[in-house]
Image 1 (tube, rainbow, N blue to C red):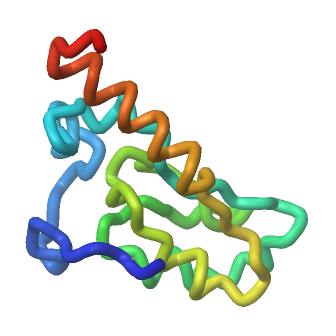
Image 2 (image 1 turned 180 degrees about the horizontal axis):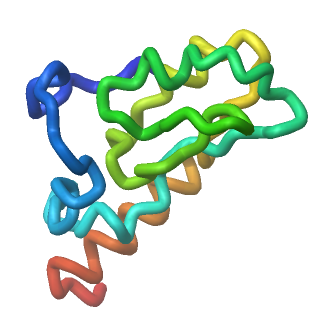
Length: 115
């Protein structure tokens, strides 16, 4: 699945991305409660940096050991664009069923609906 349309300008520079994202919400849910972000399999990663270059949300940063997920909650919920770009198949995301169930529960929690 490609990234959903972004609500903010992808080219905008932000001095500290993690600080800027604190307090952001996704459908009324604090973003830091949603466990949607990439995981890098170090065994498969070739350190090519395609993920770092591709991600406009600055989820990744480059280290001597290769790319790392440095701002996980900057990732757009549902976006898997970097996974498709990774030729070594080193990037993965939680399953859509798992995230759908998690979002359903979080919506109940944050709407006050205890059905």
